[in-house]
Image (cartoon, rainbow, N blue to C red; front, side, top):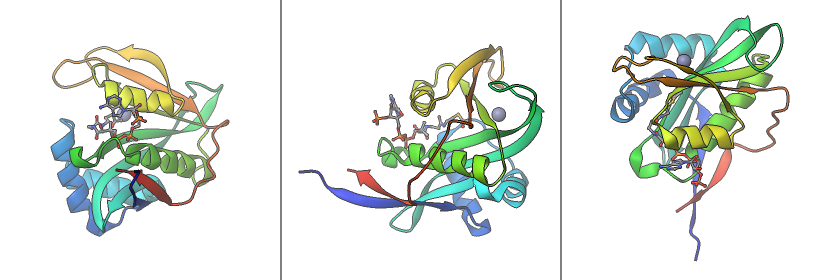
Length: 175
Ligand code: ACO
Ligand code: ZN
């Protein structure tokens, strides 16, 4: 039998930031001060999303919008930059990060007019690299010593010109 439950993806609110910061510290070595999260929420709130299970925030994605030379497309473009993504360990492998990312890509494209999206990820972070590849990101290059502990990053990017999303904000959750 396959049991179904639900999670929702919605825009982050200021009163979510405490929980978002807690998830960030639990899941990633790259941590930021409270003002950094607040700044992203103020400026790019459409692409700062949280996932909720039974009313509890269990994951987030935080993005920003930049202007620069395209990586996957020609010329000067608006680019989405995925700054941080995490899902609490006990809620992983249920499609939550996929849903957060799809909703973020949709917002970057439709609300902010981004032509592409990129991110950095540790070369050892296979779960995240697989997730991004499934979402159509390609490894563009290695950035040597990107992280504070000396690890390299992959720069991964995807054009948003061929990205379309037709889903609702509610998702089936595989248990
Ligand atoms: N091993 C192998 N593949 C994996 C794994 C894993 N542990 N986790 C996810 N994947 C791949 C699979 O292909 C998976 O599809 P499947 O379950 O059908 O096989 C696909 O990604 C989608 O997985 P989701 O369920 O959507 O991802 P999840 O909600 O578990 O979250 C995440 C993935 C965010 C990477 C989570 O493991 C996490 O929070 N890790 C720690 C923080 C982190 O590494 N964040 C990304 C850093 S890079 C950045 O922030 C820009
Ligand atoms: Zn980055």
